[in-house]
Image (tube, rainbow over all chains, first blue to last red; front, side, top):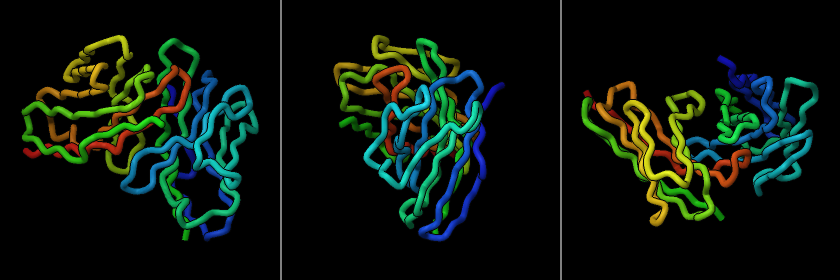
Length: 114
Length: 111
């Protein structure tokens, strides 16, 4: 069964460093998303991406964040200068074009900023 | 903006039914979802319902939607210890739009 994969599963970084979180969406999907979940809190939408551009973003997704689909398979989230409060689980999701568009979630990357 | 609320904890005995409740504020919500998250794992879509439906049943799961009250519930029949997890209610407006999640309900199933 096709699935969304994410790497790494856990990333530890120093405050101020740049991190890139990687996702491989399901191959025939067209819509891509990043969500984050701070420990013990709800899952929050960050950004959606379609046709090589951002289609929607939340207030959380400020200038420190960027997304890219550098090739036909990967979808990345970059945080330019990490802050302590960026520590969270980051989930990638993708969906297709059907009438009901289930978002398939990856297993997440746990980011720890020290 | 959109808001989705859930009670935080529910504890039941194995074999009983569990009912997890959710309320949402946005009347234009079109798609309503229930996700399950086990410790350290990602989000697994359990079931969904369109806003023009009142009820959906899928094996042990029954989803009830009261659109007038903006209330959604998930009933798990014959709850098992393996059902212990966090259950998230979520909504979206369109079939490709963002999802707004509730805080999650931690279900504990006691043997």
